[in-house]
Length: 338
Figure 1 (spheres, rainbow, N blue to C red):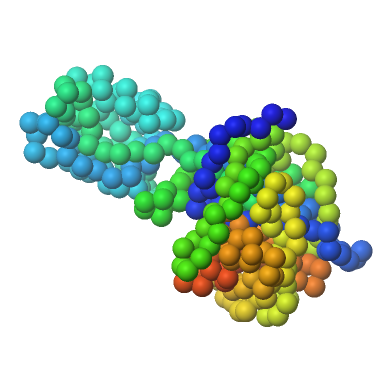
Figure 2 (cartoon, helix red, strand yellow):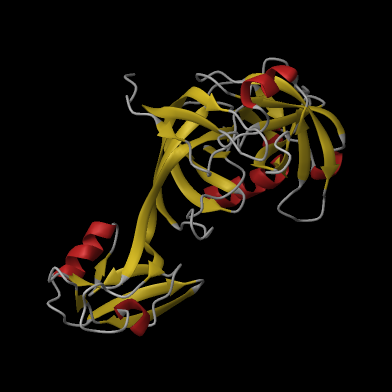
């Protein structure tokens, strides 16, 4: 498969990969809790449901002293679903409707949190004579992450362990659909002195599947080809303990490796930090300086079972980071695939 030549600096949505050569699995494992380890990097092209408003501002050069979007009651983080009855899939579609309006009022359907309402927006002409709405919008995101595991039973996969958010607001991007491809890690920008590094790579155009959900527990989707690999049992939350562990992550190419770590803390009460983990492997620390962006989704393995996935780095202590329980991810995958 021919690889794309351009390099993508990995977005903050990414963070890990993993290796499985030393993992053993009990022959009596419950099949419903047994999955196939991922570990390889993946590329995602995610398209939003409508377009997301990033910010509003006055139209430069307009005779109006206000902002058309604000006057219509539109706010940052709103999702514009349709304009004049046309369902929106891209920024370009919305721009064409606004610019061709001749200043006439546009009826928009807006989603704010879980509510949908109608707004009447009247565009203003800017200094170049082009009609504008006074808002910045976003319709898609792209980057590289790590598959945590696949479920043959559910025909699905999950990765990242955290949601993909709009970078300036931190708001989850509502997904319309997403394309999942293979990815290749080409280099590492190391973490050091509270500066978080990154894994840098590119898409391989090898189709893996389709993303169906973006939520606080990660990216979830359907696989569209036969997945083979090493099986591993997912541990119950209450079986995860402090002490020695390993992470399975890829820092070059597409093959993950197993590295030593320690689980410092376990929180069985629902939180954004189920696990606190510290990298102790000298080889990994030499390669990455600690946890870097792009390692999100890397499996955490303890006592031969999959206990969680790396999700975030602790900025002022880059050897350490947070993780999510694997059992929580499996429950979310079940809900996503139903």
